[in-house]
Every structure is written in structure tokens, then in C-alpha cells.
Length: 589
Image (cartoon, rainbow, N blue to C red; front, side):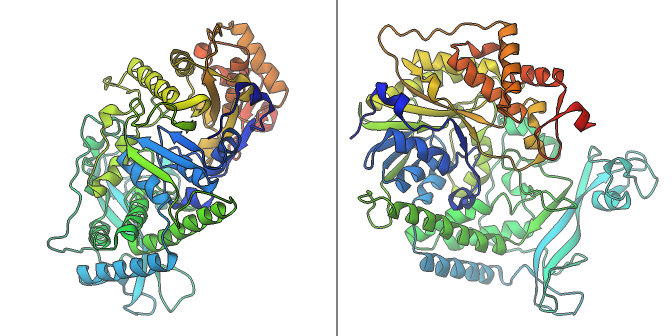
């Protein structure tokens, strides 16, 4: 067991800025909200621990801390209230023989086809007439009701007739303006993309009706309601759109195929079964109606909400499943390769010493002073509602997260989980971390928010837990952004980067009371950071200002992303739509 003395922190090789891509094999194997990439966690575990040490994550989520610890020859103890988190995190380190996984996966798909009575994605090619072509994906359009003549208008066809300009969409019957805001009165298939031996590339053809419905008696399907007490029920107007049940987000064909796969996976050997269930849950969002169509390219599925676009895809579930089996194998191989670089690592065959339990962060089943280091990524206030989104996968797992225990702040009319409650939970969790941590151990916490009030809440929570943030070691985490909206979101008042805070027990007589900066101090610091080219986007500048504030001992309650963006505009800067980076007003125009 190793201990990092507090006087050694200045000499440690801790990064000041962490650029971590979201494209390594582990990250890509399974989606989860706000995952911290393994390569962003590793530098801190390397510096704060030694091989064989125990790393704790009380808000473990999808288990990235456990993967990073295992890859570096450390042990990990992971806890979370999330059923989905435990499922994902446990199976990331459930390393299975690739040949066996491939073999059982193929058998599972074959048994599913047999159970369904036929391959539901086999279609007739309308170019050559072959009956053994395979449907790759289908494009569906909602039907909206014309407010003038009440006709059912195919949204895709109206958009196509308007040359893909939404503002010019019209009802073909009466010429009235239509949009996605018109009442939704149904759905209609518009294009099938197929593979056939007659063509080296995919072919698009009118929708086939010979494989739409798959009805099998006795095949279990999830009948799980998304209740009105859920934040996402309100935010996504699920009652208005009639999507209050998990099953309503799938086409009848894909729901049947998923049900068949789920049944066949249940009969597989234990470790392979668990890994294939991991593969299965990784495709559920993509296999649903939440995969958005675009004229240029698919826009992927939204993991943070229940949005169904007016034009969406129905993908071949077997294709998705096969690709994710290969992704799981690549993830396992990546962990094995990293593990192999650490001599004496505590692996038993293919089993890393990583344990994941369902438990609240404020009540950990661990003895005092039993862990060497804590790395954690708690929920960021009211940013995301993990349990609501996890319901989509947990419906198939048959077990559910207790969302009443979630460390979040409710928005809108739901005010059961208040900011005071959230602060109490963070205080209790940090206090519990301090209890189980060895003397002079360190806690590293990833946190992100665009509200100064929430950052001040974090400052109070840290102090209340008897901890102090080491301001000199504060790092900025940039995971990259995959969308123009994400890049430009600084001007939408949504932070797209996080801070990494390392903290230790407060010393006797040490003051942790922050001072409130004046508006002029905040504005001057923002302008100085901007002039120093320390940041190239609104979110980056905001994080630089927060880091400056922590070093200066500021109370962060009045430092909001909105204030930063106003200072940027006053300086004549805009955000380039293509890159999300700062450009001058002259360049922007």
C-alpha cells in the first residue's frame, strides 16, 4: 500500500490539460452518459497510486475507473446505484475468449431466426428480382396532419419536394405550410437500403412489405412504462407523443428480433451470456426509432434523451449485433494488451481484480482507511438524468435503478430532488470517501457545469467534508465534441468541458472560506485569459476562468458561462459554425 504525502503534490507529473479522444476500443464498445475516457483517468492513477493499490470510484457509472485501474495493474472497488452501470462496468472487465464469443453469438443469431420462423430482413431485390437480398436499413417518416385540409402529409416527401428546406415544406393537397410541429398522425416507410449479389454497393429501393411484421407467440417483450414522475417524461413530452412505454420506441420487426435475441442469449453459458447481454444492451438505442436520419449522413442515436426525429432509421438488428460483438472483442483485447505491460499485475487469468456493487456513494460497504485513492465522476447537478435514460436498457435487464436515490437536481415542475438535497448527497459521498481513504490519500473528482451556483455548491460540499482542493493541480478535461452544436454550445450556455479537481484532507488551521470577487475582477480576468490565447472556445474559456478563480481563492457562485459569453461578444468575437472556435466579428461576417 502506498501513500502520497501532501508535500509531494507539487513535484508530481499531473497534467494541466487532458485531451482524451472518445474513440478507443473500450469507449466505443458501449454507450453511457458522460463517460470519462480511460486515457483521461490513467495519468492520475499512475501518479497517485502504485501497482497493487486499491482505487475507489463511488459514482462508478459505466466502470471506466475500473478499466483504467485494471489496465495499470491496480485493483478497483466500484459502487453505484445504477443497475445499467453495474451491468456495463462488470462486463467491460469480463474478458471472454474471442473465438468462443463469436461462435456463441453466431449460434444465438441462428436460433433467433429459427425462433422467428424466417429471417425478417430478407427482402426481394427490385433490380434483379433475387429473393435473398438483405435489408440493411429502412428510412421511416412521420405523417403530420395538415392544419388546413387535415390531410396526412408524409414529412419526408414534403421535405424532398421542398428541396430539403424545412421552411418551404407544404401540404401536397392544399399548399398549406407544414412542419414537425403539426400533429403526428402516424408513420410510413419511404426507402429500403439493401445488399444484393447483383450490386457491389448498397441499393436504395421502395419499401418492401414482405418482412414488416414478425409475430411469434410466447416471445417476451419489455412492457415497462416511462412514468410521469420521470424528468424525461416531461422534457420529451412522451405523453403527448404516445411513447410512454419502452416498447413503443421500436418498430414491430425490430422489437421481435430483439426479443428473440434476448431469449437466445439467456440460454448461453454464464460468462459468455453476460458478455453477449452487454453487446445486446449496447445496440438497443441504435435499434430503436431514436436513430435520426439526415440527408447527408445518419446523425446517430441520442443517448441523453428520448427524442424521435420526424425521419428516422430502422436498422438491421443482426448487423448491429454482429458489429458490436467485434467491438466487444476489440475492447477485451485492448485491456489485455494494456494489462500485459504491467509486470506483477493482479489478474487471475482473464479476470482483473475489479469488483462492482450496487450501493449509494454515501454508504459504502468498506472498512475505514481501506483504499489508496479515489477517482470519481459524480452526476453534474441537473445536467443529465441517468436513471431515466437507463430505463431503456434496464427494461430488458429486468432490474431497475432506484431513481429516487439519484444525485441530481430536478428541473421544471418536478422539485422532489432539490439542490439542497443534491448538496447533502455530495457532502455525504465525499465524507464517506474520506472515511475509507488511507491517511494522506487523495480524491480526484471530474465535474462540469455552466452555473456558478452549482460550482459554489461543490466548493461548499468539499469544505463540509473536511477536504481542500489543491488549486495548482486543477486540470481541464476536453473529450472533444462530435457535433457542430456541441462545439458551438458555449453560446447556448452549455459547458462542453469539465474540470478535474484533486483534493486532500484539510490541514489543521487551514482556511477554505472563499472570497467573493467583484464583477470587475471577473471581467478583467476573462479579458486577460482571452488575450493570452488560453482558450479557443467559450466553454474552454469558462473552464480557464474557473481554474483561475480556484487558484485565486474565489467564491465561484457568480461565475456563469453566460457571463463569459457576454464578455466574448463585447470583445468582437463569434463562434465559427464549422469548428466551434473563436473568430473575429470581421471574419464571421
